[in-house]
Length: 193
Ligand code: HEC
Image (cartoon, rainbow, N blue to C red; front, top):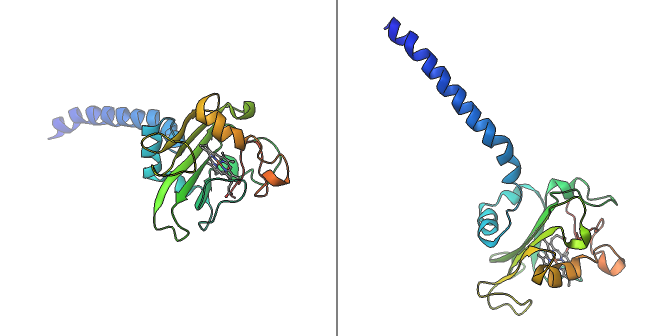
């Protein structure tokens, strides 16, 4: 027994070291990455369904969209990069992100889509350095979309992300008409805190 114990000890210790290295290697990155929306329909839809954004700062109730929003009944969640700077004046830091849950009705029984964005660089470049995603019901008349309801899925450099999302969000905070909520600026209309 004694010989067996002595022999197996280094093996067990070795196994633990390998395990810890594995966890440390993935762990530190994973903690940040799971909290940020991945880019691309498949990844972002899976991330939305998993619901980690629900731990961000979320509005307490669904509301009709505030002008000039075309988003309908919704509830907004902002991540800490936004919520901790909500009442400020500077541009948002890299990794600023928000999710807007879209509902068919005010009572929130049916979640019908999402709008999401993520700031990918410290400089917004007038919306170009943000990733934009939105999916609406396939029968929605509110915005042009593809066969599965995707309105935009890409950086704000081209396509619907530029013409639709940046086309309006670039005016956030520019004047009273484009400040539906306190602190709205730098592509963000309603910072939740
Ligand atoms: C005509 C203007 C307009 C267009 C077009 C528009 N939005 Fe918005 N969006 C708004 C306004 C205004 C709000 C805040 C609404 C509120 O507080 O109810 C908003 C809110 C949001 C939010 C929640 C965080 C925030 O900034 O308030 C996200 C995310 C979002 N929009 C993403 C998108 C995406 C993605 C697109 C393109 C598919 C898009 N929006 C197109 C005006 C617009």
